[in-house]
Length: 100
Image (tube, rainbow, N blue to C red; front, top):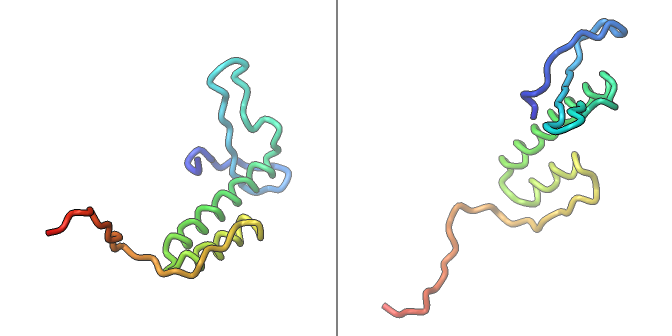
């Protein structure tokens, strides 16, 4: 989605802003973002950037608890905090029920 944004010049603020326009694939083929102003589209891009950075930071955290704290900054206090358990790449031992 981030790749769908382009730069456009805003003559009111004399700055470049991020712009997105995606048309529905069926009639009426209207732009999905038609109700958003240029400033709102630019703010939407900034929030998309913030979310992507938070997701990358959460992925790099050592524990699920720390990762959930990072995501809470984006999603708010209603986002659940997980237990403080270390992440492990080890697969759990699952007995097969057969003796050797």
